[in-house]
Image (cartoon, rainbow, N blue to C red; front, side, top):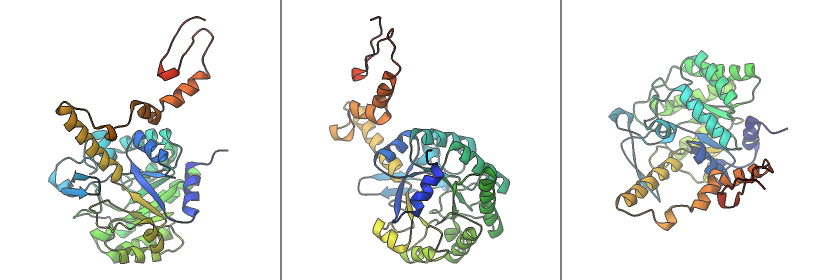
Length: 335
């Protein structure tokens, strides 16, 4: 019997070392994550303050929701071309998630935002995530509309409501007979204080959260202190590339501090934006993208699945309809 996505994710959480997970935003990016050899990945929404994300290979504009300018990141950006400030709906997120899950065999962790409402909404969110086939799901304690914890002015719900969201998620999982992994995130580090974020994380662990995340930790010392609470519960680091508040530690440092999993929410969307901008600039000037910056057509066919499709199609060829799959061409006719 095939291992369930949640069981596969729990096996990863139980295995030694720290496990790195990029954030995907559609079926193709998820396929690339799997082909690169990662054991799991996240779906994620990410918005950033106005300015630039500066990495070794890119300089990408990013966004503050208070400016009303467009964002370009993650599922909200890829699906709607809109910032991740609560504009994308529950149904749209679930539909995108189903497409991602169907495209790969590795476990996927969903971005459940703040559960889309009160505790009863949270329960519905969990049930739908289970039906979609997610291995795990984030739930956070922000108010609506929500946004990135690395920006200013974030607000969180009161303690009791935050804890009840996680309890509702645990109850929904039990009622569904599922083992989906509940990742409990608090944004109270920036909204209130570091001490408040520790209190909430411990409370989330006490009601049964499987993984804990404090977003926008501001130093290595804070990261270490976080990993020391609820020692039996795995900790997640959210490493916002190139411009976030949390220090970008290397995998060895993350493991030494005490983290079990780490998310990289911006890399794939960021480099995709830069690559498309460069390609459009080239085309507009009457050229095509440079040789090294674009895969060959054969590579593209392999990545999106043409070759595996052709191989499977051979199983159903008939004597009447001869199908030649060489080079992706078809010849129909009588023998």
